[in-house]
Every structure is written in structure tokens, then in C-alpha cells.
Length: 448
Image (cartoon, rainbow, N blue to C red; front, top):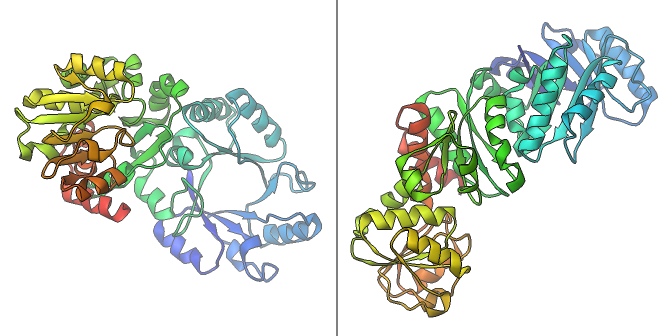
């Protein structure tokens, strides 16, 4: 089983880390005051690793010797250090690539080299599914050697390698005692609370730099008493077909899909819900590769109170999110107009849902409800917003478009309600229970 390894930079954090559930320590003597003083804390029942990052090998060597004599199990030495072979049987031989993750074959070759000097350890910057699969495929091979190793994916996209460190077979998972210092790193308390069998869900999109989904879903996990976590999985377009294997390799229970992949994921789904079939876009995927669309539910929670039936409605945009909006308005019997920068896409979407495509240049302030499903409003608000109309933007928490609409006298709504309620519907589909909406709302506001 993977050890929860607390990274210690202050002696006073040792007891705190123990109480939180750590089962191993990495002592960063290079970050401690008076590292040459007596090291009695190294004589402890937990697995202990001593790390000193410095170019001064002679002074490091003396301190490493002192640490091992004081009771440390291992010293961490870089693969390119002259000290690499000095402490046989007591070395973690480490390598870091802060730019990329190589292919699985290169990772395996690297670990073969590192293992000649001790317990091999490597950390790689993860950018997306391809990198995650390289790590999991390499770990599968390395596990067959029957010897301890440590493998880490860095960055937000690498967080799942830390959550699933036990599944990968890593000897330890490095965790912060309180506040994390690296993207994707867990705290000791988080790692202990999750355990090795945590439920994991994720949001996929590109570039995925702005999303509150992890905050609201993790709040729902906590409120429901589920040992689970929700992570970000940035996915370039070319790597969308790799998502099913990532789900299988890392035990992911469900995916949310956001811009721009809501239609691209259709290619690998085994089944689709009736709503997803009609909409032609998916924002929710189960571990069985069933696709669903809960975006329209979030839109309904926002706009049903305004009774769209027979109202003049303008939909801006024609991407995956717009498909859910067009479906909603068609179901509610609205008089739907669709405008988009690419006129052909607006025409195709309008034909699909019995709407009318209108050029952006021909928009007039004649609509009762306006919904923007584009990342940025594609037209000047004053051209189509009239006082008293209802305006919704799928962007959250607010946008320049909504600010302009309010100035023009519209009643405005951001994508907050939509995000929370589409997420709640996805949560119920994945876990079989309804989440605590108030907990999700509070988490959203804290994340603003």
C-alpha cells in the first residue's frame, strides 16, 4: 500500500502530520533551520526519506551520512549527482522533468537506469490524457519488477496520479502538511480521508483554465459522506479518443465535458440518453461510457420561471452548449432565433430544432429572452437587448456581456445556476443519490 508521505520543513509539523494520518516522512533538511544540529526526529517508526537540494556535494554528503546514522531509511539523491552511488541500499534516486512527460517506453528505460542506484523516483509534468496513459502504462511494467518505486505526475492534470498512487503502485505519495505548495498536490488530511479506494470523477475540456466544477462537486462529495474527489483533466482535441482508456486506467467513475468537446466525445460513447440523442452533444459520461446531457436541466432551473413558451428567444452561439439550449427552448415551445459568427452552423442548429437562423448584423432589440452560449458574446449587446428582457450568459460568475445587459435594463443571470444544477444531475447519475444543492452553492460562492 502507498504510504502517505508528509513533506516536513519544520520540526513542529511532525506531530501534526502524524495526527492527520501520515505514514511516512520526507524531511527537507535544506529548508530547515540549523540542519547540522542533532537529528533525533529521524529515529521514528515511520518510513523516513531525507532530501537536501544543493550543488555542494561534500557538505551534503556529510549531512546525509549524519541523517542515515540518526535513523533515516533513505536519502534522496538526484540522478545526475556525483553522490548517486555513494549510499547503496539507502538511496532514492530521483529525476524531475518540469516540462513534459515522455512516452511509456522512455519512462521504463529511465526507471531501469535509476533503479541501479536505489529506489527509482521520477516526477513528470502532465499536460493531458496522453501523459497520464504514459505514466500508467509505464507503472504497469515497472510493477512487474517486484521492487519499490515512486512515480508522480505534476501539475493540475497530474493530480489524479497522486490520488491513484496506490493503483499505480508508488511507494509513497508526497503530501503537504497543511497548505499545498505545488499544483495538484494533496494535503496529508486529504490523502488520508480519500484512502486508496476513493471515488474519482473529472471534468474534461481545453484549455480548462477556468472551472468551478471541482469546487462544487468536492463539496457535494463531502456533504454526502462519500470518499471521493473531482479533478481537472485538460484534454487537447487530438487526445479526446484517449479518454475511455484514461477512465479505465485510473478508475474514473464519471466525466463532465465542457468546451470544446461536447460533440467530439460522441465518437467513443457506447450509448446515449434520449436527451443526449436529441441534443447531439454530451456533457456527462458514466464509467460505462453512456453519454447524457444535463446542461438543459441547468438552463431550465434558470429560465423556467419566465415561461419561454411562445416568447421570442435569441440564442447566441452554435457549439455544444448551444445545442442543449436549443433543445430546451424547443421543448418549451419558444420562438427560437439563432445567431452565430459562422452562419452555416447557426442554420444547421436552427434546422435541427425548428428555429430560425439570423445574421448577427440583422439583430434587433425585439427578444424577450436572450441566452449567450458563446465564450464571448459575438455581437454588440445594444443591438439586440431591450429593457425588461431576460438575459442569461452561460459564462460564470459574471461577464462584460451581462454588465452591458444590466446597463440596458435587462434582468440578468450568469451560468451559476446552470453549472450547479447540471452538476447536481450528473452527480445523481454517477452516484445514485441527489447531492446537497446548498453545499454546492456555498462552494461556488467561496470559489468566486
